[in-house]
Amino acid sequence: MAGILIYLQYFLGRLLYRIRGHDAGQIIRTAAFENLPMSNMQLEATECGPSGSLMLPHHTCVAADKNGSFPELRWTPPPKVQVKEYILISEDIDPPIPRFVVMHGLFYAIPPTITGVLPDDTEQDRNTKDHITRSGWRYVPNLRGSSYIGPAPPLGHGIHRYIFTIIALSEPLRFDRSQRVSKRHIAKAMVGKVAGWGQWVGHFERPWPS
Image (cartoon, rainbow, N blue to C red):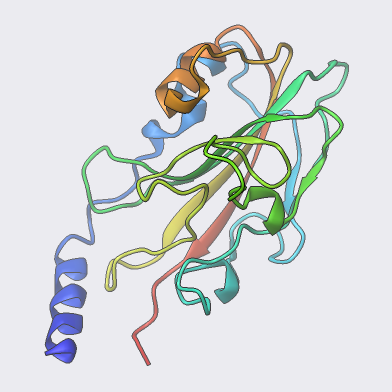
């Protein structure tokens, strides 16, 4: 039975292969970026290589824990700007659902002194019910209700692009009810505050189960 389900997943993925490329749904296409349409920051994935590289297995659903860890990233602050806060988001813009973008992780209230992220920085702090990571950053829960889920495209749907975006703000974000903050709230609150941004793109295709 398990083998039959695998083949069904694969053929469904192939059937929906052309449904992809929802670039217009990523966060940089929202109103907050209208005055800064071009990136002015460098974002690098130290483990994987230049933008467009393959993500490593331990970052993805084939990791030992079936979830994957956040890749190590480094960025440079935007020039001539006093950054007050960073936002970091990971999005899959190729799911087989029309006009739908999957948010894998969204972190905000990242201090302006930070210029990189390690996997532990994005792990949920289990000692509190608040949406806070081990490093004290805040996060918006993803579809699983967790702080981060690694790439897990449908079998047979080909390579997906995972867009990691760092955003520098000239003013910190303020929310009355941080537990109810969504991606939409973040995008709206950023209007007039975006001072810089940069992206790194990772590629991953789910392999045939061994």
